[in-house]
Image (cartoon, rainbow, N blue to C red; front, side):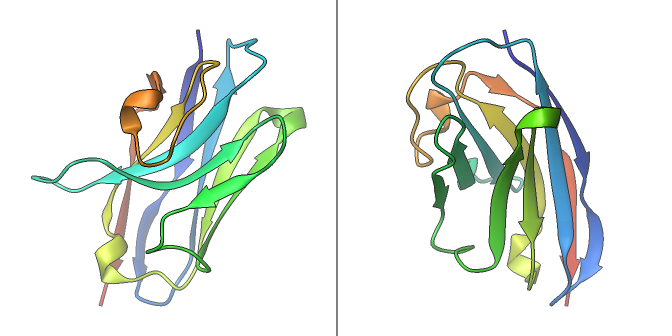
Length: 125
């Protein structure tokens, strides 16, 4: 059973950068995806970026392509999200997620069975 602990986030002005990290433990699945999702009050949780841990292949939402980068540090069992050129519309609660050994799609939050506690990202104009 995967356990996820997030760190990072905070407040920044538009055009700035922030970094989120997610430390994962407690899983031994051979197939796993990890991803970042975000949610604002009153809206559904949406996919931001995901990575297939075994191969390093990455996936991004169109809205963040070219600005955000997801990466993994296998030695530290950590997945990070580097967010550059931030916009006010990026303001949200960001959640780390793990698929728990299943194939997963960034467009389907229900594919991810394990979630972090969330980290707030606020971008001011």
